[in-house]
Image (cartoon, rainbow, N blue to C red; front, side, top):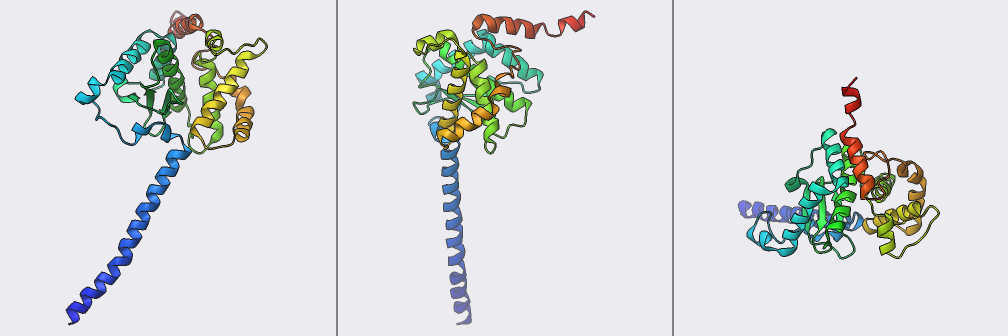
Length: 262
């Protein structure tokens, strides 16, 4: 009888423990979902569950993914923007490897790419990138975020100013606001049009990945705009077009030649 009573007591004690464990699991799941919502992970559904395992037959046969990888390689090999950034990151001790640091995935229809600071990985939205020029811009934009992540202690998740600064730099230096791209968007302007474009695209990027009001986002962008807009590293200038980017890449490649000849 005593033994049965002890067993009964054990069952009674275990039930609250089980309930507590289930409650903790539910809380953790809710917090995970909230984090995804707050930091834009919902825009990249394959970040949490991939349809194909990396390197699987299904992946290699998936047309969008195959095309994405080809365009990525072309961007890394031929885009002066990307080549300069890859070189700068290597010099800073953050060598970028295609298979490790890039991932072609299906995304929400509102985004073309993203930088996942938690994994130091660039996401390329294979279902939304269909032209090489677009791929070049996305790779450049996200590599600027990766460069910022490499060279500074960027607090992507807690410091709103850090995020805003990197978005301003990415919009300014990636060619997003080039004259040709702005014409294709039917955006025209003369006086400080580039600054207005950078401000607008940085704001758009922030609102896509953070649940904040437009007023709050605008305030933070305004606070850091001047200093971040004039930070041209590693280009040394604003590469308004491919020609500018080629000159910047040439200067970057020759940066040590003067001192070597002294």
